[in-house]
Image 1 (cartoon, helix red, strand yellow):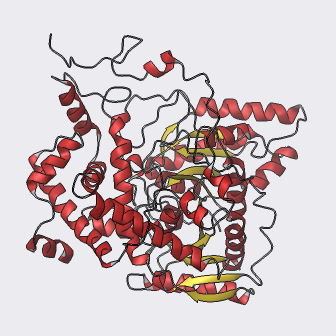
Image 2: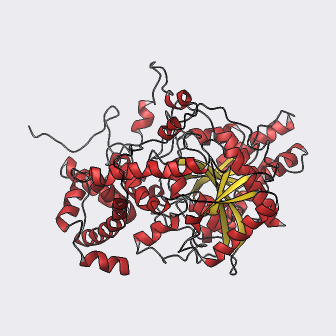
Image 3: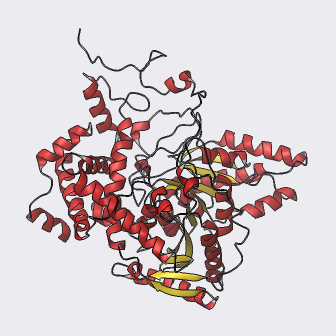
Length: 118
Length: 481
């Protein structure tokens, strides 16, 4: 496909080494085949994303939550912004019910491979 | 609009139960029969709980027999996308990584449906972790479009859309992060609602992108969609982003028509890439709205072309964080015989996640990583504000906005599965509302020459669902004429 060939002929945004580094950060193991595929796809997607650079956003505040634009509209600002509940202790999920779904447990804790060698 | 194998609507069910023309048990049996007949091909359901459905139906019949008042959705057979939890009932999110997981709690939206007397049939197939536009990313196999089984039902809530279209359920719940309710509704010829962000509690929804994820209904007609949304909407202490605003009766003004309403038609949604048959159907629908007395105004949403890249940065960044919890410790799959803790994490995630989920986790991790955060993530959040402001400005001029839901009718299985960017473009008209947090609905608006449904998307102001239902109801009535 055209977008793909062009992407590969220019400077690649993501190298094989970077794909491996990002996979490590994400706690993922990739086969050599997956690594090639992911590198190709990430470069294609990031080339497409690069068009955001056309916009001057120096004066624009980042928007992390929808409630932020409702505030700027001045629509019942307090209703949307203060929905935190009172800080009171409440019962939580039953431990046995939670542990029932764990791959390995002693009933009280989740069990994992040994982390520290004594 | 007709479904392929008509299911009774909510009002018909209510009056038939009240007049003792049918029973909830008969209705549940009819749905279960339809699933048994058709779902071998369609594959909308991942699990069906026959015993539980019949037990719930029996309770409703008991209430009818005793002459008790019936709750709003008494006897209405429903299914839920398998990213929503039901206590003790396996939840997969369409992924191998949650194999064996039985959540210890029930999603608020599902509990509200059950409390209103609706009868739970089972859980519906979807793209893995709701990531996809075709339902081909389910680890349990694709869903097929009931209108043409060579074609996809859309995604990621493909099973939820197909179940209503094939007459297996009167209502289903799906989730929409970038178009995952509206686009499959369009492909399958049913109604699909994206409620305003904060309108429906997300408690019990397995998170994909928390600032975008929403739960909404699929039904065969607009009035049923309004009824179901009225039941599932409202504040919930378990979701801090759920809004305390009161929930209006969405069906109250639904038949008022569009005379005198100002409807915006954004030029950017009718540009290059729009299938000619879809364009003709939507243009035809708009002309009917004009003839019915709506004032049609050309508007501009100038940042539209930046919506897809903005979405794929923000959604994947949030996904990389949300999906970090799937590591083989607390639930689901664990890779056999790990050497070390790190080895367990990596092999579990390698084994459990499919290709699209891995791709999005990697992209999200990359855009959040040191040195790229400002260039990608912060930039996308800034453009997100510009996209939201486009809508706020437009809604000072018009009451609602009408567009195509998707650029094409349903495409064939395999057609886009090797090209992520082409697949992402299937959401080009839906991601904008997702980013802005406004509400929307896809309503059937004609068919292609080859008999594939085409959906019209109606977008409304934050918390103004009543208006989009009113326009949707008019579209439904006008296109049926």
